[in-house]
Amino acid sequence: MEVEVDALDNAKCAQMLAGNTVDKTMLCAGGKAGEDSCQGDSGGPLTIETNGTEVLVGVVSWSLGCAEAGKPGVYGRISEAKDFLAPYLTNSPVPTSTSTPSPDTPTGLQQLHGLPHPRRWLLPRFQPRRLRLL
Image 1 (cartoon, rainbow, N blue to C red):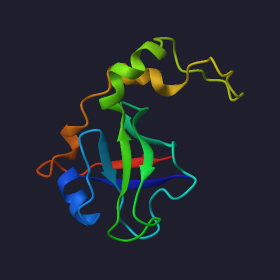
Image 2 (cartoon, helix red, strand yellow):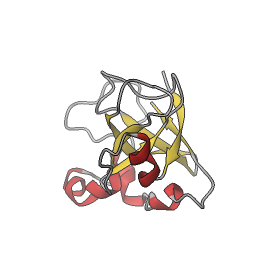
Image 3 (cartoon, rainbow, N blue to C red):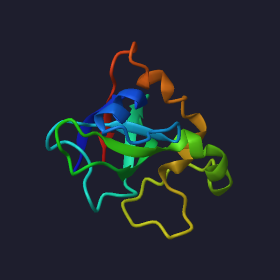
Image 4 (cartoon, rainbow, N blue to C red):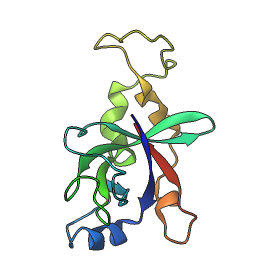
């Protein structure tokens, strides 16, 4: 199951979330009734399609409630964890097999190396982007 959610500026997101801290290690998306992550989705991916490839930009973290109107989801911002993640990633291609990879087989995270800085699409003056929550 997947849903497309709108990216939000962090300052606006913090206001919508009753003044909770939303810092540079986080990004916000969603806020429409019935269209967001929920309990049990934590750790799941938030991706954006770039040149026909799904790129991981966030990891489901928290929200106030569950897919409620006016309460966007907050995600861990992958670009802020790049230095931490880099030693665990490889440049090998993403597996195309439908079988389950072994625990030490890298998956889609290697796309991190080409990830543009997400602030480009979170700035309020920029056209809103649609993100896909998988």
